[in-house]
Amino acid sequence: MKHTIETKTYYFDTDAEGVVYYANYLKWMEMGRTELLESKGINLIELREKEGLVFPVKNLSISYHAPAKLYDAVIIETELEGIKGVRFPFKQRILKKQGQILLVEGTLELAAVDRASLKPKRLPDYLKKLDLKN
Image 1 (tube, rainbow, N blue to C red):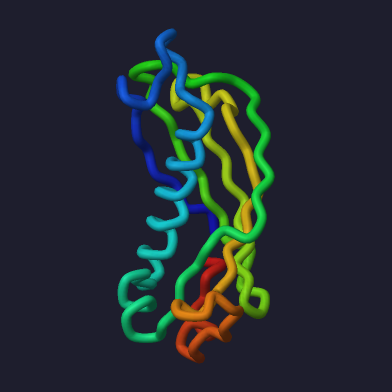
Image 2: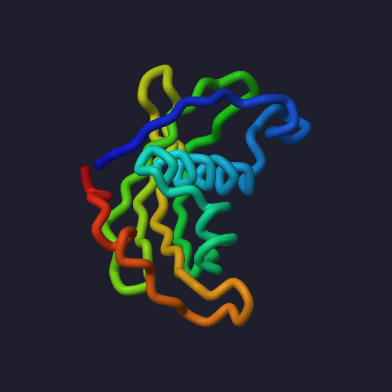
């Protein structure tokens, strides 16, 4: 399942030349992942408070293809490839809406860990049963 959201670039996203600062693409990717999980009924605050689970980034690979500029509308595409044990691998792309120009693409893996110990922690059964591919 490919989940998409749209946003636009604001002045605070850019450098002095009006080009989006590279780290802000990571912020947009986080927005995409959060929205995808919420669309499946996964509330990260509830998982932290009730299950003691948090989901730090374990691996990240990103390629920059073209810059976004001030006021560009962008599309954030996020695809969860499934749950593999305690790992959540994602593929993500950010495109300039006008012309569907690929700006950034990356793969990212979250790990389910215990909030207190930060050691890997199995997911509750109800999460394992969710259909996260559709």
